Length: 203
Image: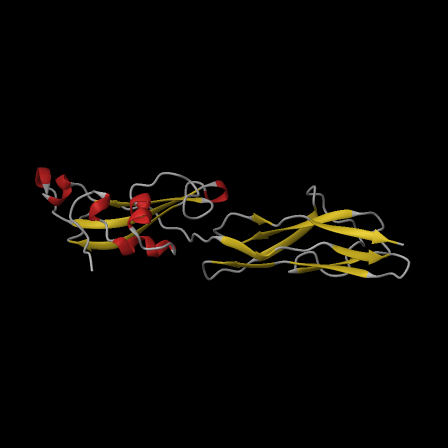
């Protein structure tokens, strides 16, 4: 198995480094990861780059402590702007270099978008909209259903709770064709907004 090199070059990064981001451990992904500064290239909402110390640090130039190492640096964007997480991938002889503050940094994803629904107002039918979401960390997700334009749902329009994974709508109250969406949130993560789900009212 290839080992980590001791200088700052993509060819000195092990092929399996890319697997940390759950992408194929191949030369292409390794090279793309090395020194990457493109937002969302690997994970939505973050800029992720892999770096090694330079030759001067390895040689202990100017009396500094000799050390080697590779790090994975994640910089948040949007709601996580300014949050920096530095993970040590491999190191030997760590110096007293200052490190960035580490914050919890999660990514939210929606695996099942809410689907359109039809309800008959004469029969007082109810329509339900459900979202399935998750995250890449141990965090609590919260949900906020709104109309597709972002307006709060009208009082009495929802039978269920607007802060759960499923929204239940009473057609006897919501008599017009409208669409809904849900915003999924968590501390330390950018919000993720679902696609719009249309409610069709029949009589």
